[in-house]
Amino acid sequence: MNLKSISSLASTNCVRRMHELSIVASLFEILEEKAKEKKAKKITSVKLKVGALSGVVPEFLETAFNIYKEDTIAAESKLEIEEVPLKVRCQQCGTEIVKDDFVFICAKCDSRELKTLAGTELLLEKIEVEI
Image (cartoon, rainbow, N blue to C red; front, side, top):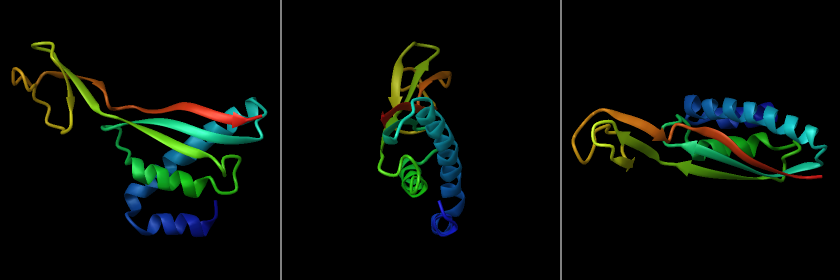
């Protein structure tokens, strides 16, 4: 990755995109390590799970990935992002709810005692390589 690429990435929505860029930089350390372990010639695809409450914007993550992958073992790879919705369980009535908002109130009993079950993850799910 060259300085020009970093500058263009940082110029719009700087703080938000720099966050995703640092995540992608860490991701590439893992990818390169795993590819080396498997003696891979190249990485062909990467799958991530990104939770709604992970603090990561999938579109920014994809942009950062596509810029960062240039001139790496993953230059031709495809990134797949599975977005994981926020899922909670009410501690009062036991109802499990998939939320499309971030209002932490049970739709069934109005309790505010909700436990997060899914939606906070940022996981490297799968790497496909060519040996």
